[in-house]
Image (cartoon, rainbow, N blue to C red; front, top):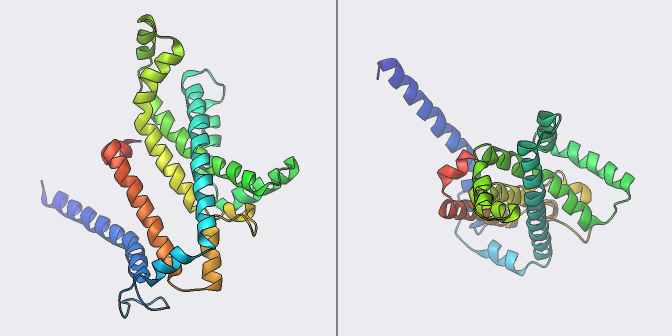
Length: 266
């Protein structure tokens, strides 16, 4: 390795370290503040305490929002996995005119600002006569989680050898049985990857959810905004720390079941 290559490699590592430090600092500060005893955001805190987590446990407004977010995230992820997989199989295996345009359309929610999507869906739901808050939230979250599934499953299907299904059929399996026993296990890492990202994206979504909530049905990010407006104390930091823990748990589960390297391949 020449001197120039060594300098370039060192520069890459320095830039990567600075980027990681820049991204991780807000997370570390949030977690540290959530364990402080001060009633304001102070770092370093005067002493360490679990008072804000105890307040979360006793909160009556938080848990309905958590339940709503978990229900919406779980159902929207399940629906997106089914619809996204069917769309991906049709686009990869079928002779669909305008295939690239359809793929771009399906993943377009990842490219557009959330506020634009929220306003568009709000107007569309009103024109369609859909006024139920919970159903509106579910449909909106399916729209924002579907791109994760479509993009990931299409990438996985492009690496799958479909002659294995034909071989299984020649050995006596029906087509649905061959799909369940051959295709589904091969796509399991893609399902897990897209499901984890879709679930976390639904749990953390704010700019679209804000258009479809009311005083009785709120998601966790909306409730957190209300906490910031009414009681600007480290309670929000404690909620954020638990959300960070949720993301870490999701990564650990993915690493145990599939492996982070294989997850990154999708």
